[in-house]
Amino acid sequence: MTHSVTPLEVRHDVNKFTCGKDELDNYLQTTAKQHQSKDVAKTYVIAGDGDPNTIIGFFTMAIRSMTPKDEMPVSMVKRLPSNVPGYTLARLAVSKSHQGQGFGEKLLVEAMTKARAAAKEVGGFALFVDAKDENAASFYKKYGFTPFPSNPLILVIPIASIPG
Image (cartoon, rainbow, N blue to C red; front, side, top):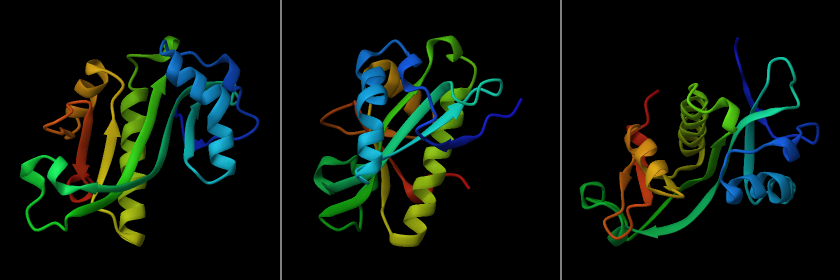
């Protein structure tokens, strides 16, 4: 079975999605479509093969405000301007019934690919993520994200380090 990542559409049943984190469930159910219609953020989903309206997982991306390089990991800031542009992986979640099956990795790789493509067209140094907890931060670290010294739940990967 191949599951493709597509933009969130009206046909997708957001109300049945549950990942075990109320903050993420509520965002998808009440806010994601509004943010998307106002071009505040863009949400992408993996839907079920048998039911293309059922959401298996999702991620949301947005432009990140300029980040002071002094807040970032020291290993990344050499020769950068005092404020660094980038993108935010604002949310990523997989439904409880599909966790542990590789969908989180598929969503993350897709988000990283989109950030790399956007940076190639308009610039941007890094992809940032604000992890919801230590478990989420550990997940991102496995894919090359580095935590901020002052807040280990904020992680970053330079666009140049994204494979592809």
